[in-house]
Length: 258
Image 1 (cartoon, rainbow, N blue to C red):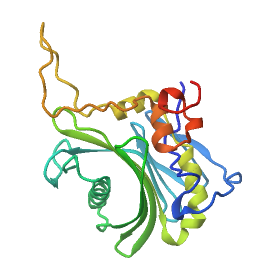
Image 2 (image 1 turned 90 degrees about the vertical axis):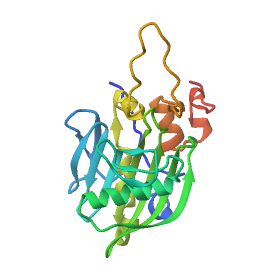
Image 3 (image 1 turned 45 degrees about the horizontal axis):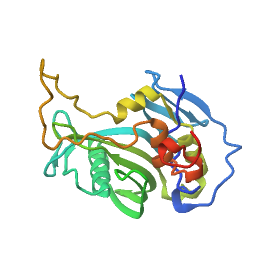
Image 4 (image 1 turned 30 degrees about the horizontal axis):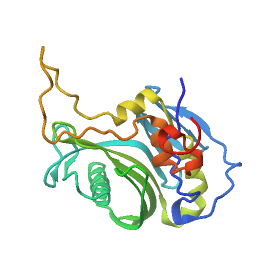
């Protein structure tokens, strides 16, 4: 089955600390696949695919490096509040992507028993799809300091008010940011997810109710389905890789035939 790399996490050839491109030819990766066969990632010796399923992979390195790709966090559109049975937290959908990212990271840290992280954002770079941004900066977990680069995409709420946030995140110790950049870049670029799984990742959290027999679907105020490019290749070109127009197929808004 054709697979697609959707997490190169590169901005014009830059990565953590905006370092210039490095030679990764000497970095050897072995491919690891999730148990459910929905995703795979290449990792070097000494690194571990800790867990993965439903398109998500979590990789750790020998010096505290953490790579999370394809994380889906469900939120409830409403005033800020803790999570419930079916969602991780409540937050207005019109909150900023920085606010959503911070809330996701702090909720995740609390769940893992880690100190509450504090974030400083060096930059926020919009993507060609307005529901996604690329964030760069630093994070402190108590006395632990890290540099990070991440992409967060916040998909529109479904008819019950739940909305998905999809996160791709690289974190490395601040003291190792330049040294680790080519390694985490190559790992992220090796990430693959099956097209069928990627379609599920982009689908609304709550399916529409059954259509009444002999009748039309009722009008549901506030329903705003995700209608930007749902082809996984278009998402990849326009969000993850931020490819120049001449490398983007015409059906994805570029000028390359196809």
